[in-house]
Each structure stands twice: as structure tokens, then as C-alpha cells.
Length: 543
Image (cartoon, rainbow, N blue to C red; front, side, top):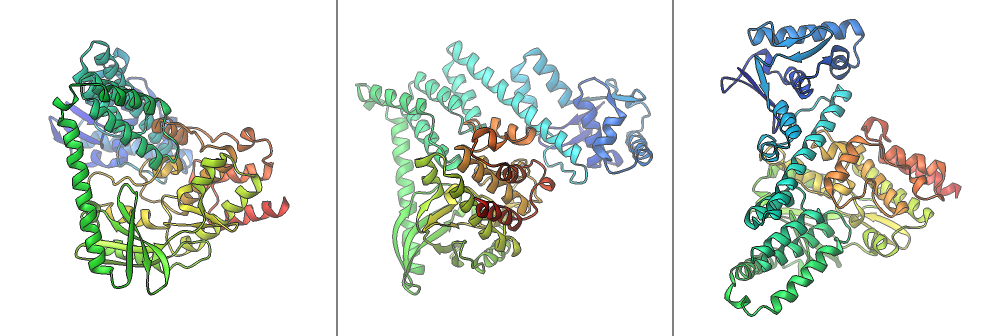
């Protein structure tokens, strides 16, 4: 019996062993997967032709499909794997698949089975850049099955909470928050379940972790319901005479804080020992993720700078030579609209770099205060950002994480910071771990970045610039939601709502620029930041 698995990768097995031969070619396996995903409903040959051979004429496409079907069956030593003529389905007597099992489990409401079957993204790692319809279908299916997975996890968590099985509820809510750590609904469920088990300190730690993560990842204020629940829990802890007898979670939190403080002290000692002759190390900067930062004063340049240290856990995964080569490109960039990197190095196994300390106010702070910017101001800021990206793109450097926190406005001019850093880290760690290093905010990432496309180009930054321009005009990013899955689903499956429908003072010309920046397919966007800048400068001159 053949078994096709499609979640977390795509493998065809026979009697438990991976099947080798012509049928194991990834595109042919994908052909089988498309038919399997129809869950017993026949798939027309015309649909398969459109997915796999969109550029071929009808005769050549039909011939290619016949060849593929023949090669698959020959490799599997059968002539009856596919049933039907004009429309095809898999022969259930010869092959089963996890995707069909998932469809049946969803239909039956077997939530635990759904969670057990979906072991990763649908067709994880499969790309077909020469078949855009197939790519779009795969992206849509990934979102669909991810939603099934999340919905089943939530159903299991709600059921466990309803029957009073608080320990099991904690386990399910934890899995949900691991999948969607910025979802207020899921973190509220986890906080309540932890409190129900008596671990109110752990519940408070979850609340504070969520609030910090939402501010960092989504650049928005966290759901006030979380803060309100945390306040009630703090009041209960303060009034609980037994709290001193259950110090486990509090002790663990205190230990963790001590460990972090000691790590900070060691970092500062290393900085002063290694760079102290040239740099006066000042205060640490609150930071999360792959980079730790400190304020410093550069004696040689006679100006304030920031020192960035790459987390050792990330450095250990990195191709250091590749990372150094990428940083070398960044340090060579000089443009009035780019905040410069001055130097970088690798000493005692610590990778560091220094950058200019940005002047003015961040665009994130401006938007937090004003919500929406005057149309002309938004256009000028976006044009300045495009002007900064253009020379970086010319040098083969992508920003990779363009968002308002990395744009600073001073004296009417916008400057982009941190250009290339995320792109460098992603490239240097790409082939060193089976788990993708996820850096950046989904609120500003392009569709191809969200699905893990390794072939990103400057059009991905163009999309991120479009998100920022949309936010400056509308007050929120496209498909804004505190649920990343909702945001991602919108990016992958729907056209962005017209900005003119959100703000009637936006001209048709500006609306068209925003829409082109935010096109789902990279080929439908501006080809470069320079093109975007030219279009925006023309609009600014017209107003």
C-alpha cells in the first residue's frame, strides 16, 4: 500500500519506506498531492494543465501531463493508480494520504486526529517559481490547513477548559500560543487556565511576555483585555496569604532574571575589554530577538553610536564567512537616506557591529501619536525611504524587515536604519538548521516572505514600503489583525482594500501607487524602489 504524506514535507512511501524512482520527483509528487487534496473528488485534466504547464500550448501541455502520469505509474509498477479519463482521482485501493485523512477528520470533528496528522506546513519546502498558478494554489492550501490545525487546537483547549481539566487546557492553550504568540484570545485562554491551576505567577509572566512581543512584532499596543486580566490576578496574588508558600514560579522567574542580568554584565565586560579604547559603553537598549544593543560614544568619530551584538545562539547557527561578506556590503553603503554602519567584527566568537545612533523621531512613535499622517507628509516620507532603499538594492542588499520602527524623521527628512541586517542573518543561517530562523514582523512582510520563499528580491522590500505607506494613510497596515493567521491569510488570498476607500483625500494616482506596491504577485509590483520613489516624487510635486 502506498502512503503519501504532505505535511511538513512531501514523501511517498511504500510499506513504510520512502519510495525512490521517477515518482519521487517533487513536481510529480505535487501532482499526486493535488489530486489527493481533492479528497475523493475528481480533478479535471484542464485544471492540472493550468497549474503545471501554464506557459505551454494546449498540445504540449497535454503531452507533458500524459508523460508525467505514465512515469509515475511506471515507477510504482502499476497502471491503475489514477482513476478516470477527463478528470482524475487516486485509486483508494492502492494509495492513501494524510491530506485525505485530514479532510475526513475535519468533516467528522475529530480534532485530536487533525492535530496529530498536520505535522507541519502543507507541501513544506515545495516551490514552483515557473508555475504561478500552482504556487498560488499551494499557498492557499497551506493557509487552509493551518487554519484547520489552529481551529482544532482551539476546540480541544475550549473543551478541556469546559470540563474543568485545567492541566490539559494549559497544554492546548500553550500549543496555540506557540503557533500564534500575538493572539490575545489564545493568551487570555492560557492565562485563565494557568490561574485555574493555581499558577497565577506563571499567568502574569505570560501576560507580560505577550505585551512585550506584540509591541515588538506587530508594532501596536497589546489588547487591553490582557492587561485588565493581569491587573486582577496581581490584586489576587497581593491579597493571597498563601502566596509565600507557593514560590516555585516566582523563584523560577527570579532565577531567569538573575541569569539574564549576569549575561548582560558579561556582555558589558566583553565590550569594555574589546572595544573600550575607542568606544565608551553607555546604557543597554531594551531589545529582543537575535540582537542585543548598547548605546555608546565613538571617541574617534566623535559621535554617539549603537553597538549591536548578535545572540550567540544565532551566531552558532550562522555561516560566519557568509555573514561577514553580507556585513561588508552593508558597511560600504553611504546615502543621506540611510543610517550608516561604521564597522563590524568577530572577536572571541562574538559577532558585533556599530551603527549610527538615529536622530529624530521614529515613524512608529509618530504613528502611535498621530495615527494617520497628512497625505503629503506620508508621500514625502515614503519617497525618502525609497530613495534610501535604491542604492542598497543596487549593491545587492535588501532591508528584509522594513517597518516604521526602522524609519526616523528629522528636519523633514526620513532616514532608514538597519538596512540589510535581517537579510544577512537570514541568508547566513538558511542552510544551518532545519528550523527556519524567523526574524521580522508579519505586519509588513510580503506574501513570498511569509511563505518562506528563498528567492526574495527588491520587490519584497517594495511590498513592505507599501504596507508602511498604507499605514501612514489609513492608520493601520493592510489586513490588520491581532491574529497573525488572519493577517497572513489575507495577504496570501485577497487583494488589499483600496486605500482611497479608507481615506477619501487620497488621489487616484496615489491609490494606484499603493495598490501596485501591494500586489500579491511580485511581477505585478514596481520592479525597484527607484521606480516607487519616482512615482511618489511626481505625486508630491503635483500636490
